[in-house]
Length: 272
Image 1 (tube, one colour):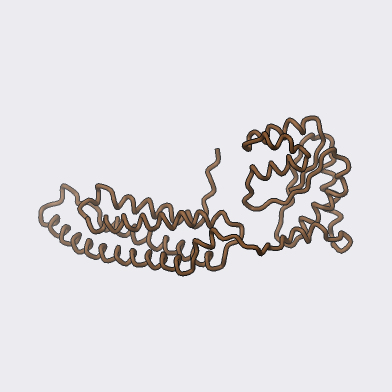
Image 2 (cartoon, rainbow, N blue to C red):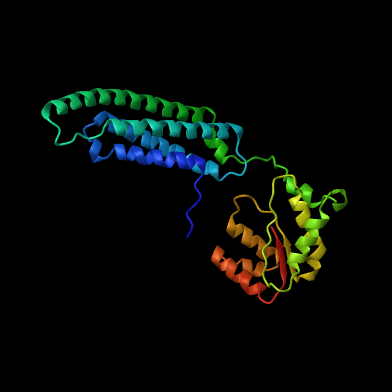
């Protein structure tokens, strides 16, 4: 099974929380003040992480929320660098070191501990400032708000664009039609990829309209970047006029099984 995709923000936050947890371990039990600050930071950042995970699921992010997310990501990188320095400075003393060297080492370590305690206070202040910004800008509300303003899906415009107004579409269209009508292969998946604005959706719709009549089942469906698979597959059942079966399908595996059963021995063209 492939590893889950981790966003840039989570990639910055997860290692930081792990290192803060390490600072709370037995190895640093003599650093009472540092451990206490590390515990506070870990709890504070874990709360921020939960909100960031919620923001990651949103297709459209409010500019204020996006700005706060980017700020927290950069803050996480800076904090991690500081904690790496802490751990390096607090390296252990070799048991074979003579008494004088050990004494000098302890004195230096004592000064480092005071400096590290000051740094931890600064990190705590930075985390609190980020949390205050979250509350001031109501970032949590951005993650939970619903709006009556419906954004225009530019793909809708592409679907109804006239082929006569397009340049260079005939060649790719003929190639796609050839691939999709090749009877040598029973099941085919064709991907149209490229930058935005290249009329990929219009090209796909033209192909769909041209050869759709050759298939017993055809579906044209718009899908978001983070689709709910249960809703998506349920929509397929509905479009295939399988509503009576939809009421009995409870999970993705069940819906997939019903779709496979229905499509067996049928020719179909699905455009996502």
